[in-house]
Length: 237
Image (cartoon, rainbow, N blue to C red; front, side):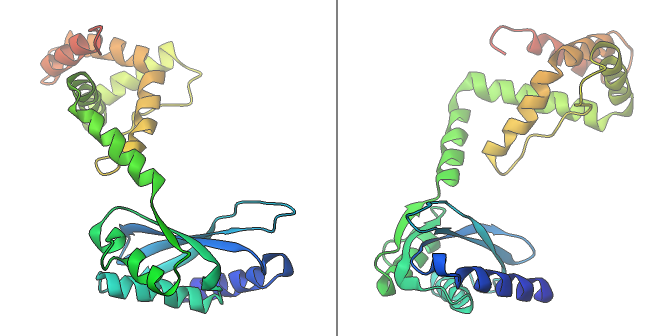
C-alpha cells in the first residue's frame, strides 16, 4: 500500500506541475466510507479555459484513526500539501451530510473554509440521491415490491435445488441471456440496487416459470415459491 501511494503521489505531482495545470481550479471530495480503516479521497481539477475538461483523480487510501472533524481536516490538507496543490485555488468541497463533515460550526468543511474561503461546501450529489431514493421505501407498493424481489433472490441463491431449476429454466427459455444469476439487493446503498433490479427484470420470465414449477414440487421451499409466484403476478408488483 505504501509503495502504491508513493507511485501515485509522484504521478499526480508530475501531472499537476504541468503548464496547463498551473491555473487550474481544484475541488475536493472525501468518500465517507471506511475500507480497512482507510478513507477514499478524490479530487477534481479542471483544465484551462482553452479546452475545459473535468478530470477526476484518485488521491489515495488514507489511514483514519481519529474521525474527529479536526483530524479529518488535517488529513485532507496534509495530503493536498504532499501533492503540492495550491489550496488557494480550491473552489469546492463535497462530502456526505454527516455532522463531522458538513457541520457549519466545526465540521471539516468549516475548518477548511477558515483557511481557504473559496472552498465552498456542497452535499455530495450521489449521497443526496441515495437519501432521496431511500425515502421512497415509505411508499407501500415500492417497499412490498422490493421485499418480494429480495425474497426471490434469496430463494434461488440459498437453495441448491431451486438454483438448479432456475438455471435449467434460463437455459431453455433464455439461452442467449448473459445474465445467469440474480444479484442480491445492496443493504447499505439504496442506489446500488438498480443492478439487482435490472438483472431481475431481464430474467423475469424465467423467474416466474421457475417459481411455478418449484411450487408444484413437494420440496420444503415449495410453499414459499408458491407465495412468491402469486405476488409476482399481481398488477401492483
